Amino acid sequence: MSSSAPDPVALSKALIERPSVTPADEGALDVLIEFLEPLGFEIHDLTLEDPAGEPTRNVYARLGTEGPNFCWAGHTDVVPPGDPADWTTDPFTPDMRDGKLYGRGAADMKCAVACMMTATSRFLADKGPDFGGSISFLITGDEEGDATNGTKKVLDWLQARGETIDACVVGEPTNPENVSDMIKIGRRGSMNVWLTVDGVQGHSAYPHLADNPIHKMLRLLSSLTEVPLDEGSDHFQPSTLQVTTLDVGNAATNVIPAKAEARVNIRFNDLHSSASVEKLLRDRLNQAGGGYDMRVRVSGESFLTPPGQLSEVVAGAVEAVTGTAPELSTTGGTSDARFIKDHCPVVELGLINLTAHKVDEFSTLDDIAALDKIYTRVLEGFFESSS
Ligand SMILES: [Zn+2]
Image (cartoon, rainbow, N blue to C red; front, side, top):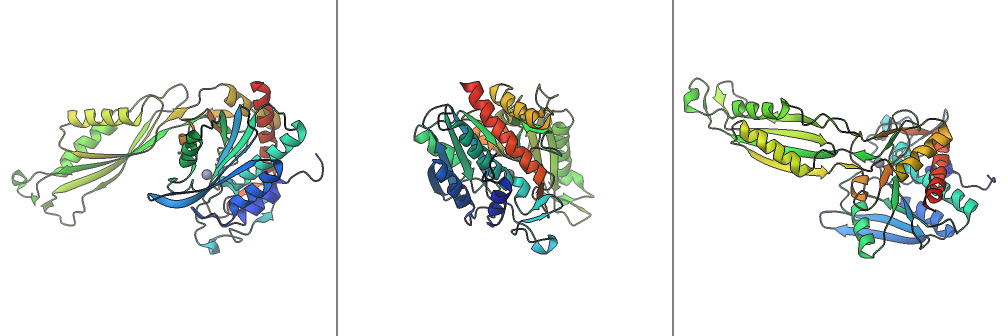
């Protein structure tokens, strides 16, 4: 590697300096554009608007016109830093100490975006323009917010212009402790359920003149929690169902309230769709006596990229650089991979998630250097195995 090779730490710092708190960009995506344009990428600077969300800047950049089209996906927006006084140094002034780079977004996921850029540049310097396909970047400024005008909209835009991506790596921080720990080949689905039970208000000394909605609600909730949703599947842990609140708002000791409300959060695996979970819940509630009102909001369906070319390439890259084969996992929360999975195989691999969204967020310089190498191996492995 020559001394003029692009430095992922310098690029990480340039990104962290832009205070791109969702959905503000503050020039963060310019860092990406200014790096990719000289490499020959065609840049699509897309500010997307939808009344349902804040206008958001996104970038889709592509080098090459041939398939397969390998896509790096991620985001340059960050969550708010909270009170900057709680940080040892300013969250938007990158600071290096003890072998670590500190700043908001260091773990989630500006340093990973920087590694995507430097790995791509190194790969192109090594292979030249005839590497056997296309490389693209789909980087959004709205992943941490409601994601209305982010990745999903860009994917719709790609589809409308007849452009396909064939494989995608998302740089979310997937690892608990070491960059060799874990890649994600799927995610659980997530949904929230609001349950309401109406009763008849009355004096607690004369319950025969009232109808207690709490008693009914407890029977209904028990019917949901008593039996597990499933036992897990080949690549997923058992689905989980947790009652997150039960509200009556009753300040009196001698009043039977008129109404009880509860909320339930469900993380479901690939044995279910949100529709099949909803049906299962309704069946159980009806069997337990019914008499409820239920509202459901789905944040994402479960998905799995079955172990195959992409996961082998990514896991192989991790092992080649670190000497350790990562676990292929489906744990954790949702990410934009939930949108990408409708278009192509998608695997997630990034830095360490220990300090993501926290005060004094950091990535170690060693981990950044390792991810830079791993991403380079991913490109090499992908185009070798595709040719
Ligand atoms: Zn993230």
